[in-house]
Length: 254
Figure: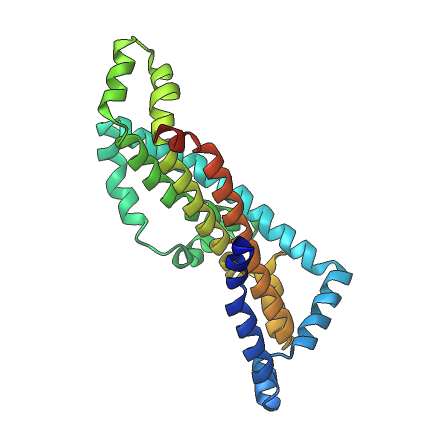
């Protein structure tokens, strides 16, 4: 009962916001345009589900996010691990990397669109870059801070470089790597929707919202915002639970 009550507390603020929204929507025509009545939002949701447009948009955004996340995480893992294990690679890549990551991802969209067009490949590239930066930083930190005593054990047992990586370095860096993927996921999801807003071609939640703005369909925009928030929260919770499962051995060590 106590656990149920604690979980219920998290619903208090959303319910209050819904009530405030409903009150604001009843304060005149101008307010009803900015704060769409809940019944119109419900009707819009039914319409989008019946036509399949919402599902297709969600599917396109999730597919773009997952693909870009995969590329960005793999590239960030490789560069972060490489810079952590080689001073030469760090001196070569670190200045360029730290300089480029100061530029907001969405600020690169006009340049990338000029180079590669406004198609699907450009959107995936934007998502990949968004995931690449946090993953590289966390991979570098994770591999750099593996305790020296563990490395000495590997040398003591004459492990090969691959064995040291798989049995010592990778487990030691795993908490930072999980943290990096979690951050990369958040940035990838935001940049995926952002790229759809800037490059209004193809399917996606961002495109759905832009089309709704053109048609003055505020209820569709609200539905899009809610979908973005709920899906982002769900992905975050899913990976957080997966991370806790992967790192359950840390509790055993205590």
